[in-house]
Image (cartoon, rainbow, N blue to C red):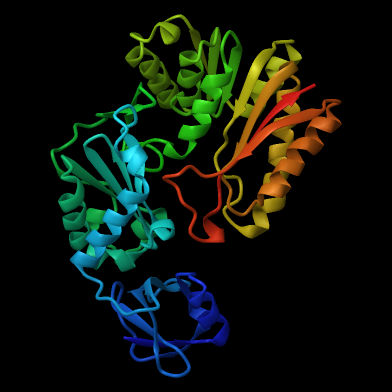
Length: 400
């Protein structure tokens, strides 16, 4: 299928942006079906790019090849996976960390799909129906490069909700060794033991994107009392404990997530510092729990705030910033003078500078001054690729 696009879209593709939007297409040779190979020609009828068509979405095509023509087949996909592994060689070969992102969509030249590894299990998440006809080729490529014990296929919400998506892809599907209901997949992160739940859990079963920030907290937690808000399955709590924290409190609305946090502590009982850390859980709304703790005069040396995305669309960004500010204000009511605030945002619609400014602004309103330690972004195995994918940022700051 041949596409011709607007001059602005041509420039964007030449600059490496893989998305072709519906409104930028001037000519399309035929209607097409999801997964058809779409070839973009420039104004002089020269090859510009090729990728996968998604005729029913605003992102009409996702370019996989830009510049020189290449055949998009199993060999191509295996080459892309191999290149992605090479970029992560240090992580891939680290025996103390067996949970990492193998393919990060646009960051690895495979727009619309991600692949995470949990030890000998791979979890592939599909964000566009354009990938469905090419999944067998991708699975063969992954098998050739990594020989996994199993692969779990997951679909994004919009793909799963599409009535044209095959029934077997509307819910997580396991290829290879089966998983029992509720069964977790053990993996390591900096020598600590965790479980991913790729069928029932969030994202691909664990929040791998915060691995580096968890390790930073581990380095800073010795002898301190740590509060982990929006804790999910307790990753920051376990990391703090391994760093010598005296106490770690995990706060989340989901009882099953807190049960998994307790299990993660049990899995690391052989670690003397984890064993020596007092771990307690609080089930409830984070805003309410922080407010109640501040009112009761409870304090902590470290407060970690890692909420879900507050802005799925650009129009929600202002409301998200207000929510972040409210969380900062509440944290200031609990954090001791000189204590460490670790506050994260995973909202791509919120710019890093705006987020950092909001945190400082809210602290100032609470009569506190923040001294930044650092502002962090994406880890090595989560390359951004395009500005739209720059979602993760975290502020580490001392509160005075």
